[in-house]
Length: 229
Image (tube, rainbow, N blue to C red; front, side, top):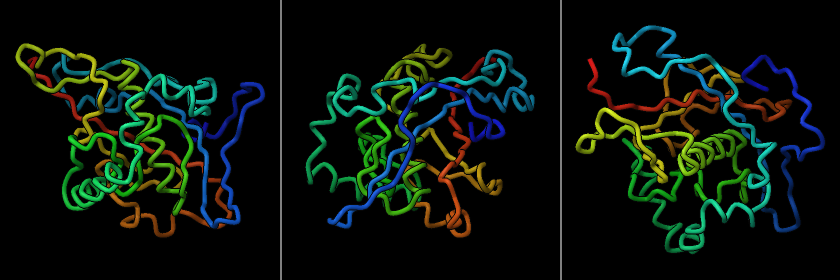
């Protein structure tokens, strides 16, 4: 549990994250993700309208180790059957536009299958087929987990649409423009947060030492619409 002081929970025999290289010189990696409920704005009392806050305490919201779909691409298709539509050079080539948009402003919600400079948001598992940077891979699987939790109805949306402006409702497609990520572990980056898909090259220098165990932590920020006063 990287963001909880590094203690361990015995979950039995599970697969561990690793990197590999074969004779084709293509790097691959696998990562598990722990998702925490962390209502920071509520704790800091930045917003005074009680109806606009998501209260509660810090808690473990999701552990990928106990989710069989996170390690099996075949089972993952149950959650994202549409992934087959984007597993082609044309769809993946369109992600270049998303990478440029996230580099200079915001990612493109219309290209919902793209993770900008990080890779593809499909499938919803921990497999990274071509790892150019451990930090890039760890951000990518965090973004995939956010998408996965949207798809499973565990994260709701609040974009103002008619009377729904004051209510949360399911959103099976992640609204990428409303999310930001910020590194907090191993080396806290308190000065900035980044849109989904923005290249890690801007901030990764000095944050991936040779003796790293590739255990990283990110604070995921999400914009929420609310008019309750």
